[in-house]
Picture 1: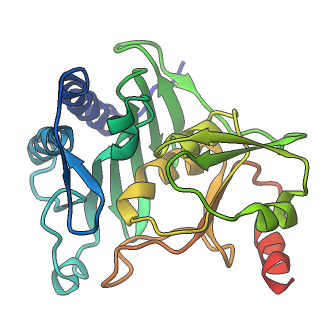
Picture 2 (picture 1 turned 90 degrees about the vertical axis):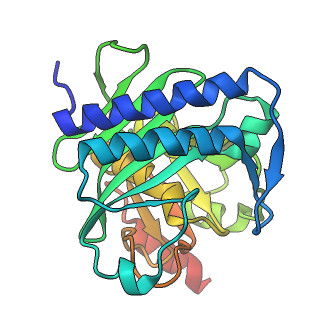
Length: 271
């Protein structure tokens, strides 16, 4: 059985260390702060941030790191980057606060605006997803467990649609235009929605609303390498460090690459 490249495995170990720091707080009493954008912040976000920053500095000391919980650098500096780490130390803080287990640690390596390495850890279940450009995608559940290659599946009948548990939206019309009315919704938090598609347990995730680049980069690489794609509403693959704003456009994550999603999106927009 194949295993991820060494760098990917090393980043996976950093993610597991961050996950351990998160769980120490998850299973204790913790306070919740509110950031300037009204999103929640806990000690677990900050603990995971510290573990990841320390680990990446030891692994690749010359590479810059862009993280949700770090001071964001100006575009005048970021525009010079060709290769850097993009991190969300705790994706799904709202799910963490609810204690439903649906949160992740996300670490991505961006090269020339593309996510070329992605690591997503679900600390509560121990599921570790890795995608490495040109190598494939894997899932490891127990620490030191066997690596399982994962692949997307053909569009199901009915299609299984992964959706956000904490961010609702009126998506029904567009979903029907993309895949018809015969689909089932699977509510799930954080970047686990992408991973569900990557492992062939769901078919599509439509997001009509704001997300940031660190929310999607790691899971996109996992999904891409498993045979799927993350596309904007024009059917173009996601790119990173595009400009001043770190907000993503609206997007759809899909598993079945035999379908012309760009044509379906264009037809849906024109209706």
